[in-house]
Length: 518
Image (tube, rainbow, N blue to C red; front, side, top):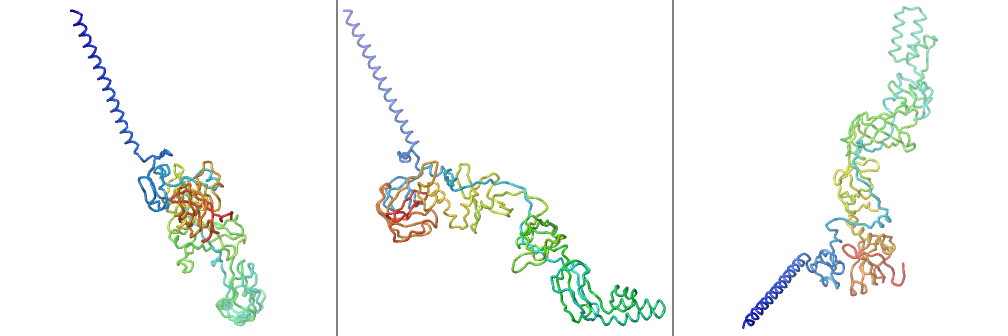
């Protein structure tokens, strides 16, 4: 009777324990399921569906048709413009927000790309100009007649003849000088009063009879019928206005003697620099015949007026020519410099791209990308150019000649050309595989087609299908790597061509007649 109640109690306790364990197990499973579901929802929020390319694992910014790159789509699919699939644009391809184009290091070496640093330097304000040597008019001696007479003998043969100091120029016969001389001699020989003799002597001086002729009259006692005109200094006969037997009158210029020991240098200063030139500025001039010899001086005066033909202002200075190495009419290269240096930001002149509308340089960013930057340029200092604005001290710019183009149209295509070059199309006539590179090049595609149209920017083909891209046969345009690339390709030809994907479309790397190379 006592055993049955004990068994019943044990069964109740066991049943309760089982029910409790079952409830705990079911509750734990439900909590784990909810936690897993929450984690999945969070993961889905962090990695939105359709934004990661499963093939590459890269994040996709958008999809687009390479033939219409400006139109973006938020999911893949067929292009509404052409019979082809939309292609993804990855965040890495977009530069992660960085601007510019990254060039493969191997291609940089092949293209000969050189870099230079933007640096600040103290420079002497000045400019280059052109000057011409001329006679120093302040050293020109004018030979004139003081009496009516005749040229008895002309020693100077022709203008620009060299002559030394004291050398005879012309012998002058002066009839009007005979009577005063005879009167003077008569007074002296007649023992007349000293005051009368001095009065006669003064009369000869008043008639412009040279003191030398009067002294010779006293010394020899003979009338001088001829008077020799001589050079007052060494130089050249810059002007000769008489011939043998010619009659002359008082005040007539017979000749001009110009000295060569000093010359004038007339410097032509561009009109836009007229306000920056001042007397006292230092000048260093060289002659192309002997660039090692320098002629230095200081601007003495600025001549008034600007030439209406050359639009230049003239400055004059005096240069020493004691060794007679210079002659009038020589063209000189002149460097005009100020006295105080000025700090300026400088880059190599070949790094500046001038289009006529603006000036740019190609800057190398911190991540190695190349980016065109518009700058304001100032003066030139030899092989360097001043940068007024647009750059900072220490920045790196491209200084190689490959990028120094001089037209706005070419400048607008510089980045696609750089990126195309980075992918193996260094020249329009060479296949992509011919460009050395330390990294694998982008894939290339090829097909055959008929040339429909050729322009400076692209070539239009009616081409066969391209299975690698899933393209059917169609007509489309392909970019040229350069305006002068594939010059032999003409509309109507059937050609085999190779291309690769580039920024904003597809870039041709090779075009040859179908069936053989050009």
